Length: 455
Image (tube, rainbow, N blue to C red; front, side):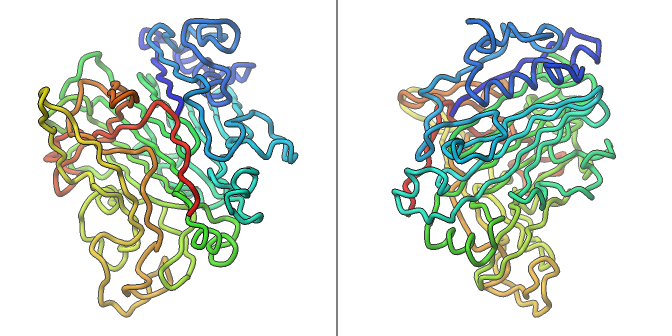
């Protein structure tokens, strides 16, 4: 799992330079170019080397980034695959000669006010990889998704995926009010309008990719309403051949992908500051979604999971009873409403590393309603009230609340290193509440975690 931290130049007051969207060869300045070169493996250092290997050599880099405060960990040891021969390419070719790439079409584009970073990602056990077919994967099984990171000077940052056909955009759809035309809402990861971002932590590898982005107005953590933070994770499910190939070939069709989006944002709060929450109870300050482009019920019926809800912050990440209308919302465990305490040990105090799990069905289980749910098209019964697929979220761990002083801190477990991400406030029964004052912390590895054997 390669890792990179981008540290933005907060001393640069020119909006044109700070988040440069010049439409030229660097397309949005150094930070979008850095994402592309990092993804395809060229960028290997923040300050050393030459050409695209060195972040410091990029055009306009000093206008938007501070290379001496950036981190790049991107050698071959941190870019390991299970079945694919290669990690990533910027080629847009559909030729079979590019079959062995996990990520294709790693591209950047821009205009005077917009910058886009995009790619396609295949499941780690795609039939495109010869080693996967050797392991027993069907020759027709080729799920992939399209990812897009979009930054605009008017609305800040958005991240989303679509299925292989380019539809069912998640975590928000094109009609969502915060998709790109209303800055009063937290977008799917809407946080970073002028004056811009402060940190962007990035993980990428065989089985998942993730972003943790923060914006502050002051250097030191402070209980005020000026901060914004956002977390975005997309991860593959370990492949179960008889289940996932059946879903791909029969239940859902070729737009099926065994994987999940976990996206959470909060604004009007500096999440680094402990024992407070300035986000209050305003729904506009919170966004949350645990969702997929397509799923199937226990009766074998395919359905499109709901993309988003301002209240979904509690349905997807908490223990709120979602009622029959929303019980099909998937959720993660441990929920962010749960307090995770430090873990005392013989050397002092440490943190637990709890693997995060995706649960497809609603939190409270079956109900008694005989009315068909409008999303699933079936009643709220034991077999049909939600997604039948459950899975570990590969590489994603829940850590002790309030861990560390800032996101992106390094933790060593044996010979392996992990980095933290702050996803928002929690440890309270209602997450969009000023009483939710603990910092929900997750950890992800610096080194790539190849997918498990197909089962």
